Length: 39
Image 1 (cartoon, rainbow, N blue to C red):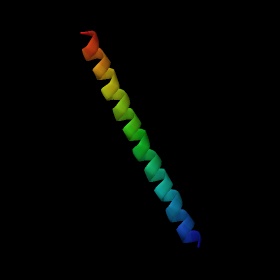
Image 2 (cartoon, one colour):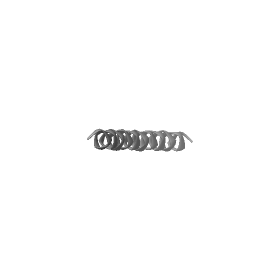
Image 3 (tube, rainbow, N blue to C red):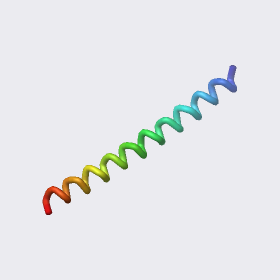
C-alpha cells in the first residue's frame, strides 16, 4: 500500500513538471508572438 502511495506521488510530481514546462513554452511563444506583432 505504501508503495502505491509513493508511485502516485512520483506521478504527481511528473505531471506538475510537465505542466510547468507547458506553461513556460506557452509564455515564451506568447512573448515572441507579441514581439512579432510590435515589429
